[in-house]
Length: 287
Ligand code: NDP
Image 1 (cartoon, protein in one colour):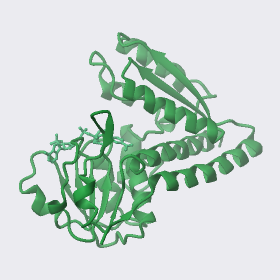
Image 2: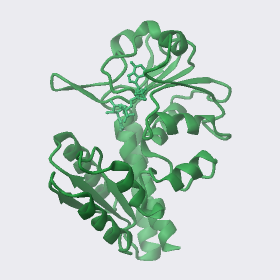
Image 3: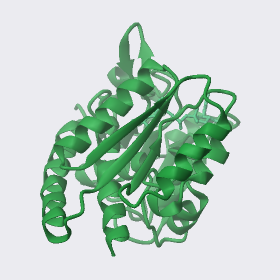
């Protein structure tokens, strides 16, 4: 038996098409063009690709996007000044600061400086707090994309044991927080695992839903997976010029019930969710 392959690329394309229609209705009704301002500091090639993909997706959905490119030597003061300008610019609805930032810049200070209403990545403590309390303004893009894929796979989350490997602020931690909420595609019993976790395989083997957000190529192998589990692979790792996930797809595909591929799984969903948040931001600011 081979797992159902969860087609993130296809789901994201469908979402983006629906969103494009919603954007066009919003533009007609209000005369407002949703606008995402992206900031890219430095020359990291992967970051440049991510930002380009996000901008292209915006354009296709009728969302304006502008790119602010700063060189690698940019100071924190200069970056904060740019963000402050964008915070005060009424034509900008969403601000995205592509990570990672160069080492002379403190990421937390920068992310905290984005005004919460324009924080379409949902990194600001105010937005994280609202999400944790179950009254989200925005949902964090990657976990929201994973949640959508779990739903698409037809997996029952209520009462399921979800094991999240990884506790980053961007992926792992909010993922668990979303699955533990009361509500649809939630109500799970959540376990977090991280680099200090003992007997990891014993824990992952208990997962009905296993989310891997580790950043280590092919880390989750078949023997770590419960037969029939839904496996969501968030990892994007470059190995010999190829993209591979955190899950060893070949050894897991014959054991899991459903699995996301890399590429074509979670990645495209992250972008679709960013567009969704940008439209939500424009709506909130048009009110
Ligand atoms: P981080 O490096 O911030 O976090 C990795 C987490 O994995 C940490 O919590 C770490 O534990 C844990 N970890 C590391 N080694 C082990 C181990 N041996 N056993 C158990 N846990 C371990 O990464 P991110 O969360 O930002 O990203 C994770 C992956 O997802 C990366 O490959 C990244 O490229 C990808 N990604 C993909 C996105 C997409 O759109 N598809 C978006 C964002 C990220 P500890 O906290 O103890 O150090």
